[in-house]
Image (tube, rainbow, N blue to C red; front, side):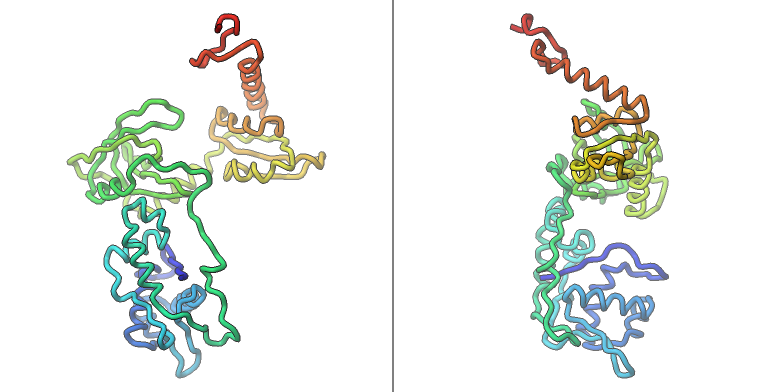
Amino acid sequence: MTLLVFFGKDRGNEIVERPQRLLAMLVALQANRRMTAGELAEQFSVSRRTVLRDVDALAAADVPVFAERGRYGGISLLPGAEIDVSRLTNSESEALQLVGVDLAKARQLGLEAAARSAAQKLAARKRWRRPGTDAERLPLGEVVAIDSGGWFVPEEQADVAALAQDLRLGRRLRIDYRASGRQKTHDRIVDPHGLFSRAGRWYLIAEVGGVPRMFALARLGAWEVLPEERRLSTDLPLETLAADLVSRLEERRTIRVIAALDAGTEDIARRILGSRLLSVEPSSDPEKVRIAVGYDQLDAVRQLMQFTDHIEIIEPPEARRLIAALAETIAHRHSPDAISNGTGTVAGSERAG
């Protein structure tokens, strides 16, 4: 089975979002067998060029639809190649539009059964040979595998599906949340926009005092639905608001750290540092590369300690001093004549016995 699900709107004056339009286009073709690009364009309030792009995208995804050019041409489903999209339930359509057939995401949202059912209906068709090709191509699903989860991501602590259902009430929430770097949780009242998933992690996007923020569900202890309706300062779509928050977070780089890194460590540095890695350049030493890393506060430079003796901080001086002080503390803590007493302080071994 192969399925491509597209999110967002095409450019132009389109009214129907693309995932809805693609499903509706298949329903229309199945009912009429053949339609012109002009007829489909008029039905969905898009351009003929957009219709042809949609057809190409569906065909590339191994869906048995093709366009015949010329005066008597049109857009058709191959005879005998049926797609059971007309019987998709509301929950199945909603699951496809939200997560495609990403069963892990569907499971977290409580939509796994609907996603599996929708996938089976879309798969209920014969294999087909695309017109105009000498040989049948392998289905895209056999040569491409996609996992939208992040690396080494722990299971979320919060019940994503339960929270999603509570958010649909449109009410304020009282959340018990632990801020990054803090040990204790604190109550706060928020006006929620919705849930956002990125790199395998879930976030609650909500306003505090009229300012939108992202709250990691992994640090959300509990929540309570309040009787008051939510009060939002913006009517931006959730995906637009999430993209803006992510962009602002990634661009918040007031500290620029320059370091020399062992060249053999470059690949793992790219994976660990992600968007914080601003540049990688050759150095005068062929065994090293010169990297620039961006942070929003000096204390975040601690992250570079994990590269141990593979890295040397060059500038700024305050970052170099911080790493030196941390290295000295770690060396003292792990010296032969000192052991930890379990409280974060170090005592001499003769007193610990």
